[in-house]
Every structure is written in C-alpha cells, then in structure tokens.
Length: 147
Image (cartoon, rainbow, N blue to C red; front, side, top):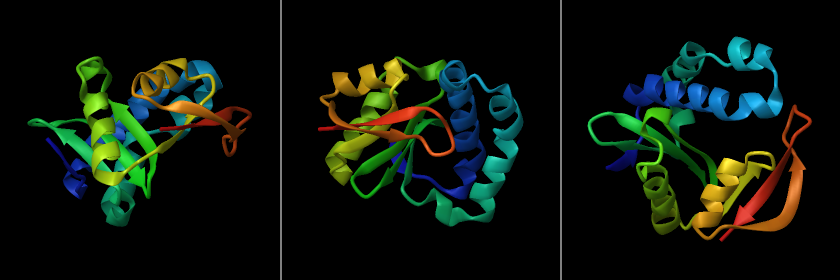
C-alpha cells in the first residue's frame, strides 16, 4: 500500500535514501568524502523527526514495512527510491504510477549519467525534453524527462 510518510518512517526513508544514493551515485560522483562522510542515515532521519514538515510530499510503499518512497512536489517527482533488496519487484513502478495517477506528475529530473533511472522512466513513457542543467553543487548535469 502507498501512504503518506510519517515521522515513524523517518529512519527507514533515510536508510533507503542514503544507501540507494551510495549504490547508484558513487560511480558517477566518485566522491567518498560525500558518499561515506557527509551522507549519513542518522542525521537525515533526525532531520525528518525534528522537522516533520520535510516529509510533506513523501509517500511510502508499505506492505508491512517500508520498501520504497517517492517525493512529489507539485507535478514533479523529486525522488523515487526503492530499497535495493526489493528492486525489480514492481515497487518503483507502483510508486511512479501512483504519482502520475493521483498527483498528475509529468516531470522528473535525473542525472544524465544515471542510465538505470533514465531507462526506468523511459519504460514508463517519460521522454527527454532537451532541457538540462548542472546539479547544484556538482559538476554533473541533470536532464528533464516528461510524459
């Protein structure tokens, strides 16, 4: 089931976020100081607990425990991550379908070098708009995909 995130989900959302980013982005950014120094589960979870407003727009896939989440702002998907232990089980597809169906999401920005994410969104009908920009604070570009 997909439901709104609560502070009870904070540690699980943080865990999924940090570990998925390490797994998928470390080869792109090649910055262990960030991957293993700045990116830590506890501080992110604490931020969600101390500032529950930061959970606004976050929805979790929960079938007994949280296996993935999507962050929606307006009609834009800001984040969609699934715990690596549960990838290729349709969870990401369900979260994406929820965002499109229930929130009319039509846009997502992905790292140009994140071919796995680009393939996932393309499989679900998203196409490159031709717009790209530098990811803030990095030397990597993100590209806009749209339905």
